[in-house]
Length: 275
Image (tube, rainbow, N blue to C red; front, side):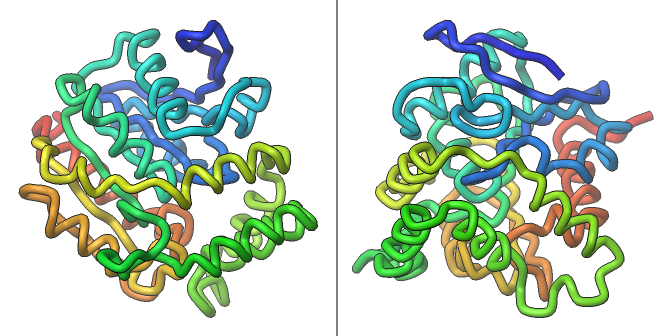
């Protein structure tokens, strides 16, 4: 748990735990490194886990500047530089997956593997990419944030899970508390990042990815549609995909044991079995 400085001299926060092969976890829109609670608890005995708070999010709220993917990716690259990271498995969730894709072009020689969780190369649908959300849904999210950001986030959090996914779940109360206590960005940062998210298109990057890639997604994701994950698998050379039945947008929360086992197995397929 510490700070690092980006190329502009700004301080950004990251969490770190464990030893071994390095795994960097990148959270999504309106979240923070706290969302990886069950990965720090469940994987750090096997791997070195690091998770930054993106600019404007979590403890990195003091960072200035536009919430662009260039800025997010440069901050991530600066973290690799400051911590002298190499042979890293980079894990990105939702918006974090797009940031990972964006950064992977410059980090390619320092990455051992890429994991895209509940991901899409393009958040909004277009004529040649029907697997995103309709523009009207993105507009609705924007209006809700403008009117009442806290209420908008509560609605967004509820959409993270498939219908009935938390009912009877042994960690339901704990997961709900984790999200309710998530330090949310201010409304300006939320809107700025949302605008960037709705305009981004990472499809041009996919064919150039030349490292082992694992795609993880739930069958009932309502935010980044399952068809988008399948699109990624088809367009990233050699990519493998694991689909989790009945799961929504956050398999690392509701199916943390399965998710953690997938990450550990993926790392062993790259680095070999731990003695």
